Structure formats: structure tokens, C-alpha cells
Image (tube, rainbow over all chains, first blue to last red):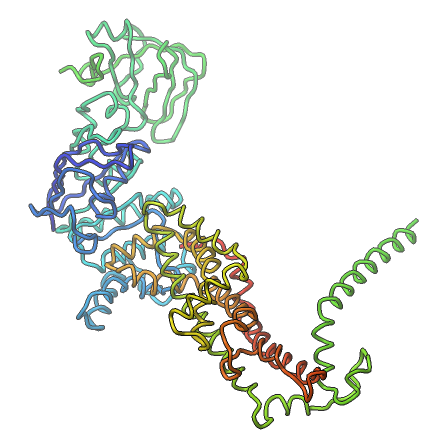
Length: 335
Length: 283
């Protein structure tokens, strides 16, 4: 268990500044997700925490101890890589035991016990004698997670662990990771993803990154309900929040107003706005209607159940008054 | 119509196999001729024949067992020099290529180009300088002189091949090992080496063959028959008088020194093939 503090952490590769001064507290036993578009520095930030990259300036503290110059293996971390990064020539057992065999004074029984406990947690015990190439992608990723568990880390780092898996497996493994977090409630976990669904479902708190800076940190619901900027508002939530500017926004005294698809209702008459249906998507439980109404991107309305609107229909819509987000010209919320 | 097509097909494949036969004959004939000559003796040697006419092992007997003959000694010298060269070159090359492919430092690509450039010098160009160096080190006329000079000449190629191979190994595997607490030495020996066997076998075998066959250095840096390696010993084999060239002995000795190479290649054949085609390693 470790609390992690970052104090004005910067990282540059040559002349390129990737992390431009990040202050962040990760609490003990918390599941923190770093999310952001590609190139925002989220993976680099994780690698700085792991110690695989050196910090250019600033301080990194684990439980109040400065760890800037500490080797990765001395930080009490374990890492799961996007590409699994298993040792191809070792069996699953050897893969999981490798880190422990390198520690001096570990007896074989102890190692076997810890590997088997981790294997049982992930239901990979029957694969212990196989080589990684004899396993499927999902099994490999479980082995990679198992290898990390075996190390008994204080901090568990995930670098986009699900992005090499297919959609069904991704959901299953996501649930597995969530379960793991419940079982290992004294382990701090940091998880990097560009997928906001993973972020929303797994995180205790989310850290949204943009261009090497922290945009907002908060619980998933805080981010969903009170985004700190247009960027966060657009990044969190699916479908994406609708942004409307110009005269329609001026009516609310804002540069831009944002309203989520699920917070718009279609009304028979006297709607706030009207638009022409250009496309509909029925997903069974809910459905999306895309409206053309002079905005940059079409406005999405999310409806429960199946809808019967056709392209070309003109409908009246009203946003829920208390769910409207107003932003000023700098993209900051007006409250 | 059909018959003309068949005829054309037949001619084409006939020509193809004719070409194959010509190439095989050209490639194999010198060795074949050495083998059949090694079984001849006396005046038979000077009668040209393309088929084996006699099986006389007296040449082999004389090369291997004649009293005062140094050939077995030369053979062991060759084994010692070539093996040690391979071990030394692979050890230096593996560690060097780890640094060149994985450690970021100033002038890395310049160093790589220099290594490649060094391998372009012909042996004869550095012979005099190398001779002075070996005299200075006091290893003239010892196997160490040959091991030293062969390692110098093998290293550029070995380092270059292993560096490109190691570059293709996924970085994540190395990083996973770092997180697991592995030192660079552990990463090299327990993670990278097992993945690099094909490359190690291929480069090691090529280094062995070139050290085994090398003539110029071996001739220059040794002076007594007891320290010579096989190629030089064969070159200096002399008969009863200075006008007699003992072809039978030379051929028998040549066949004997070729056998170890053939055996080595056959043993490692599968590794070599996969070594030459192996690209990346999938996790």
C-alpha cells in the first residue's frame, strides 16, 4: 500500500516537453485511471511512476519518501504491459516466478506457493507448464497480470492492458480487473487507457490528461456531472456531449453550451430548438437520433427503447434545464 | 497442339535440371576430386581419372600417425584457436550489442558505422601493424596471437549482426525484466540469450569457419611447426625432396580438416536456417 505524490513533475525528451508540470496525489489503495487522447503523455506519466523513465525535474514521493532515483524493482511496483511482454522462452510458471527467483534468499516452496496463489486468483493454474505461444491473447494477459500479482506489489501499474484484446474479451477482463481491485484492496492501482468507458467503469478517481497537463481529477460522477472544461466534458461520457455555440448559446449567456444526449428530450411542440433527423441508430435498449441544426457536429439525442424517426423528419427538442453546461470563451465552466 | 506444349514443357524442365547439374558439378567437383585423390598413392596420383580407382588409406595413415608428424598437433591447435575465438567473440559481441542496441549514449550510431568500416580493411593492410602489436604483447608464435587477431577480425561482423537482431527484440520484455529486478547481466544471460540462439549459432558458426580456414595471419604470426594451425601446416607440407609435392598427403589432410566443419554445419543446420530467417520475436 502506498500513497503516491507527484510534485511539479516534468519530463522532456530532448527539446520536446511531454509532461509539463504535473501535481497529483494518488491515495492509498485507490484505483486511479489516467485517461486522455493519444499523445497526451498518460503512458509517459505511468512510466515515470514505474521508474522506467527518469524524471527531468520535480519530485515523486511514495509514502512521503522521495523515489526519483530509485530503480523500478526497489519501488515495490508491478507493471502490466499492453503487449503482455511475457518471456517467450519460459513457461507460465517460470514467467510468474522470474522476479522472485532474482530476489536473494527466497526458498523454492515460498515461490511456488505465491505463484500458485496468483494462478488460482486468475484461474490459470492449468496453464502453468505451457509456453506463452500456446496461449490465447486473453490467457496471456491474465498471465501478465498474474506475474504482477506474484510480486506482491504496493503499487500496480497497468499500461493499456486491454487494447490488444477483442471486444468481448475486453469486457470480461475489465470485470476481472475490477474484481482484482476489490480483492487486493490494500494495493494502489494506476491504470492508463484512452477508452473512457474503461475509465468510468474501473476508476475510483479519474485523472484526465491533455498535452502533458492534468485537466481534471475526480470521481467518474464528478467528471460526468461537473466537467472542468469543454475538453473534459467532451471526453467523458458516451455518446459525446453536444456543444452548441453562437446565438443559441448566447440565449443562455454563454459562449458555448453543452448538453448530453441523454439530457435532451424530443417534445411534440414548443421545443427550445428544432432540427432535422439525418441518421438514427437503434441499439435495442436505447437509441440515438442525430439531428442537423446548424452546429459543427450533428446533435445526438439518446432515447430509451426503440425510436421510429426517419431521416428528413423535423423534430422539436428541449434540453433539461438543470443539465445544461455553460462554458465561457476560454472553455471554462460558468457556474 | 497439346503435344507441342508437352514437348516445350519437357525441354524447359530438362534445361532447368541441366543447369542445376552444371552448378552442382562446379560446386562439388573440387572437393570430390580432393577425396578421390586422397585415396590414391604412388604414380596413380598423376594419372587423371574422374572416378575412384583405388581405396588406399596409406595417405591418411601417414598424415595422422607418421612418427615425428605434427599434423594431429596442428589439428588440435586449430580446434583450440577456432573454439576460443568463437567463445571470446560471442561474449564480447553479445555484451557490446546490448549496449549498442539498448543503451542510449552519445555517438552510438557513429560507433556502429566505425565498427562496420573497420571490417572493410583487407587483412594485408593491417598485417604489419598487427605484427608489431603481437610482438609488443609478447604473444608471437603462440595460439594467443591467432586468437587475438581472429577475434579482432570477427568482431565487427558479429557485433553488427547481433546488434540488428537484438534491436528487434521487443523493448517491453526488457522493461518487464527491469521491473522484475533484473540487472543488465541477468537480462542478457537469462532473457535475451535464450531468444537469440539462432543468431548466436549462425554468427558463431561463421566465426568458427573463418577462424578455421584463415591462412595469412596463421602463416605470419607463427614460426614453429608445433604452433601452426592446419591450413598453414597443409600449405607447408613437403615431400622427400624440394621438387616433390606430396599431393596424396595434402589431399588427405584437406579432407580431414573439412570433416569437422561439415559435422558442425549438419548439427546446427536447422538453427542456421531459422537464424537467417528469424525476424522479430512475438511475446
